[in-house]
Length: 129
Image (tube, rainbow, N blue to C red; front, side):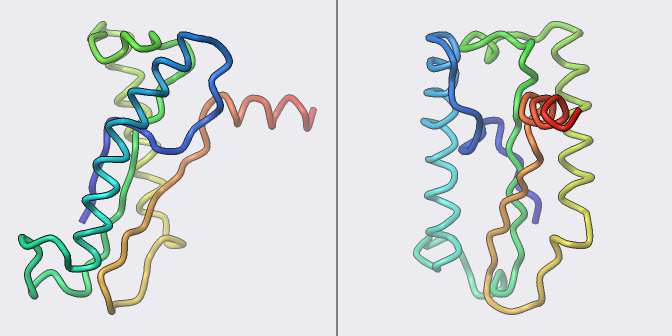
């Protein structure tokens, strides 16, 4: 199963107040999703039935481009933002489908897929240059 969250639990540390407000929203919403997924995997969710045993759940979360609006990005549906989000989604799916993320059958597994953020990749490339 592929689960795509619009908010990232993990991410870069905010550098300013606007970034902190955006990060607060990410953490508030993403942690709710994560807690419910963990309960599902432990079998604590009454909706989890025996037919789901041995399922691998690939958890992807959206990481916004640094040029996107901060806390207002929830309401930004401009052409540029939508194109950027589609490109990020394609990169996330490519990462999720990579062979290194495949797990053997067995207990229900929650597999977080963490593609490197754009800003972190840029900093790493600059330090290696």
